Image 1 (cartoon, rainbow, N blue to C red):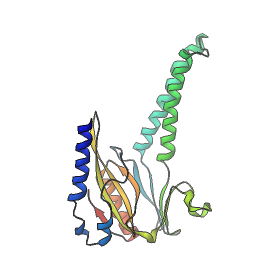
Image 2 (image 1 turned 30 degrees about the vertical axis):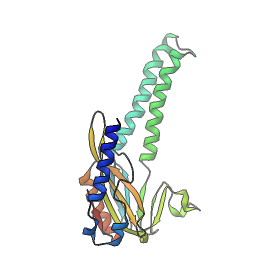
Image 3 (image 1 turned 45 degrees about the vertical axis):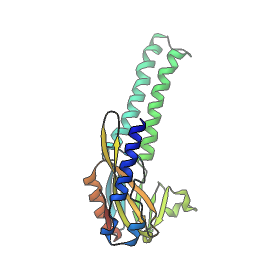
Image 4 (image 1 turned 90 degrees about the vertical axis):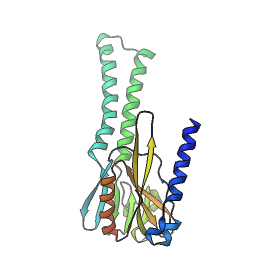
Length: 220
């Protein structure tokens, strides 16, 4: 286990030091970190980019992501019904471990799916009317304190769009996950999305680049 950890650390260090930021011809690119901002990630596309109108673009959860979250809810609900219905029908259901434990397992799956669905479908918005980027179900005009929003920045503070990859190694499968991050004028970064489709994330970055009039720094 320790050997795998050491190899992964070496790989991360090697990737960060070998990447030549001078190709972007921008001093802020040199100040910017080029290691993954958000650890982990999915091996499928979790978000799609939707143009609401000329002034607003949103990332919304993909059907694949919604299906993935929904499976947890259905499996959990199905398990509760499958375990409890025969016992209730036969009159054997009672307040005991044999009856309650399967319900708790199924309930746990349903709750996990519900939580993933709630957070996975959180709107991710670029809006020129509000001159802002944010994550959340409330727009900036609906909150008194902008810090209530999960992420909130002024569009004018965005300097570039950063694309980087992360190799994720698991016991059963390994894959690359790709990040789309916003780079601020002070070299800070804010993660926008992180999933397993490099083609989709590159296309999204190019659309955002034209929408925001900022460059794409592609390190994938």
